[in-house]
Image (cartoon, rainbow, N blue to C red; front, side, top):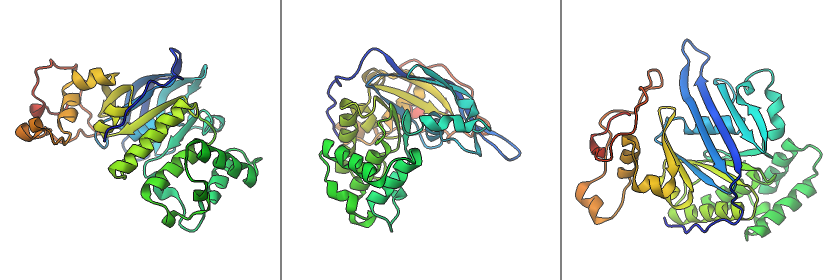
Length: 319
């Protein structure tokens, strides 16, 4: 998929969000499993940060912590989120003080969850979902007010307003995903956490969704996106920066073009070399493979420094 990304006029040198030392575990049994281990990320106004890595590396867990929706057995042991000049202590998400985060959800940070298009009830119209979501964040809003807001947003994005009267089975997978994206951003969140938003879509639907996200940033509907996926070709087209995650840690990060063209960490190079590409070079050499299985959360590997750029990706094991 190829998507042209123009320079977004809303981007400024200012920092939109900064998360520091986020550490999350899954617990409740005899042993805690560290899923996110001291991760720090930063976004500027108007940026899209691509968060990539294989399944089980901690991407979704980090997204849940940043969106302030972590619930047991997921526990946030440490971490702060600075956004809009406020410092939010993420370690209180799963404590008795968790209610203090409610005002930030949906307005400051919103989550577009993995498998979002399956969250639409098959027995209700889309308009009912709009009403329920909006009233969950603001009980004072009426159904008519919620629907007026949704209609205005659909018109802004050149989407058909009639979709609001539809049931889930009447919509394509791409349209359902775009509608859930619209509903997730009706409160104009400063930051959107998009978790695998394109994974279940065909190439044309992926393109439409990505272009819609770019347009929403350009129009100021949200000021930044953390785009979580294992699909590096998509991220290389739309993200400003990339952060590569493995075994709960960020192993390499930087501007997208720089990282794609000159990755320093062996794990990053393995990910890039494992992408199916119809080019002659790929057909000649094949795709890269890991020499070991994915790391276990019970015994995570030691963090290694980036290797020299001469490392052969096909010989890379667990960093």
